[in-house]
Every structure is written in structure tokens, then in C-alpha cells.
Amino acid sequence: MNLSTVKRRVTRGEGPTLEFKRSTGELREALQTVCAFLNGDGGTVILGVRSDGRLIGQEVSDQTLRDLAQAFNGFEPSAHIAIERMELGSGREVLTLHVDRLPDTIPFTFEGRAYERLQSSTRRMSQR
Image (cartoon, rainbow, N blue to C red; front, side, top):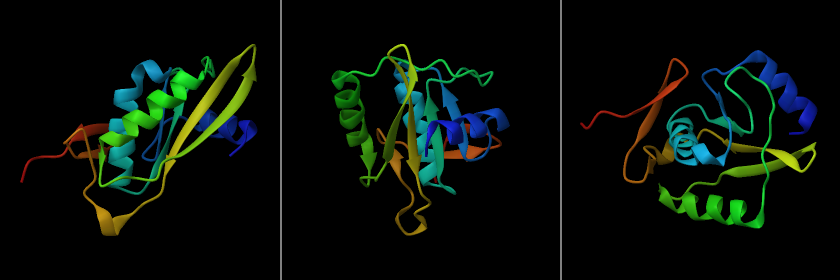
């Protein structure tokens, strides 16, 4: 995915397979959504986008990337999450976290809880 593709997707707004987060300050919530995407049809979380769809980016350091990698350890079973970085300028970047649908390995959990996507929102799955 490139920046022009991200811009096009952002203009369409959030939906069943797309969610925006302002920054990695919302990483836990972003990864709960990634978990829901893993348990559904797959999807993409874009970090560095306001809820109104404005690209704002964030500074991405080596520590940011280490924090992401560490947070990925919260998935069970382990999940392949594709990360892409796109520069906006002025030292700010947009990060995308993308997962494909993997129906043979669901349910996935994040930090011990399974999540599902319902009408563009994420919620913890019911205990059955």
C-alpha cells in the first residue's frame, strides 16, 4: 500500500475492515481491532488518522517499532501483522497494520480475550 492508496481509503471512512487511530497512544485499542479483524474478514488499522479522516501522522522512532513488536506478543495464536510506514513530511508518518482473514485458526485472542467486529465497532466476544 502506498500513501495515495491510504488517502483514497481514508476518504471512504471507517468500515467493517478499516479503522483509524490517531497514534500508537491508542495501540491497545488498535490491536483489539486487529484481533477482531483476525476473527472476521481481515482488515487494516491506520495509525496517524483522526476519526474525521484527516491524516495527521505521528513521529515513528525505533522505540515505537519495538513497542509494536512487543505488543504483538499479546496475540494467541501468534499472528502475522503486516506493518507499513508512509511518510507525510515534517518527520511524521502514517502506519498501517494489516491482517488477512485466517478462518482455520480462529478464534484469535489479544491479551487473553477474543474480539469481534460488529457494525464498525469492536467488542469482546461473549464467553461461551
